[in-house]
Length: 227
Image (cartoon, rainbow, N blue to C red; front, side, top):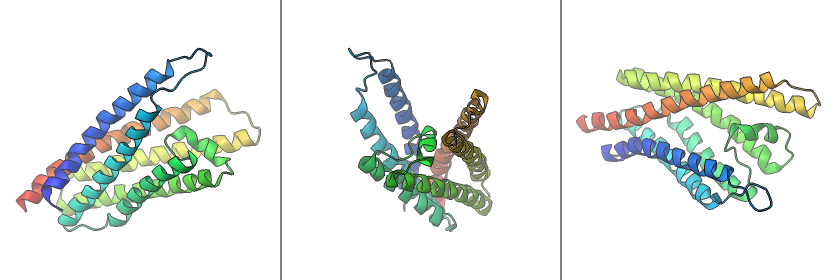
């Protein structure tokens, strides 16, 4: 893979952030539209569908160029987690079309916990594997930083590691919540708020890592050009 492709991967990270803002605005606009029957109307469904496809394609491209950067600089310890991440994201998108399941948000986890739907169960298993792959990638990125003496990539690995751990803890708490509700146990609003806060912090940390990831690809492309 050439340096230009890797640099493009870094730029696409920021394109994805812009896309995320656009998607959020579309969702917010739909949320306040009420039809004649008094029910919310989703008028931007097609836009969200296309955006979700583009979103997954960009993420897969970014990880593919990340693999290209790592390999170009003689580092292959991240190959497996990167391939797993790309594969699961692609399969999840397909499952979303087939059964409307997928794991688009953390709020869907509690529903998947008690689901007997085959697609929902498969999505839950894939989510767990995806988090394991993210943790593996975070440690591999840290190792890559050590390999090429890059403080940026060390930081990326550490930030991803912290963010993923926080997000996984939120998932576990959400599973506990789903099991408790299925058993008829009342859970206080404070516990649910704790889950929301922890998940939000985890996502913000991962977002910071994602931004650094883009910068790492752009600067890494420059390093490839000098090699």
